[in-house]
Length: 180
Image (cartoon, rainbow, N blue to C red; front, side, top):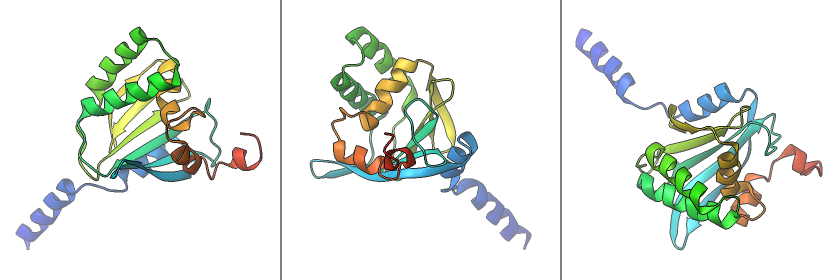
């Protein structure tokens, strides 16, 4: 019996807590509600499922919110940083020197992700971006211009993924009230 208890306790430590990312979002953003969800598909590959969270179901680009990406394939962290810079360049919100600096920071932050893992970006009240892999903080960038450019990949009117943007913002209370 003692051996069984030891094995069960060890299993509880080893087995990941799949609800932890959502719990972490709730901890960071009290009263967080999911605004919308969508899937990014590139050519024939499903890349990730995205979910946008904001307090009380009201997303504003100048208030705290979280964007959770649940990966559907394995991707190297450098490739995530590379693609992020391509998309930020499309937004035309930064010059090449700034993009290179942000790329270097993202390469240090983004780990390799495997299918089923999540990375969540949180835009904080201090206008910085904090990144989590699962429920563990993996880095932060304290530049408000980075935050605008990074989250603009999904949420800007100039996004390369307008269908995903529409789905992410589909339940936004301010949008539904005609304010967005």
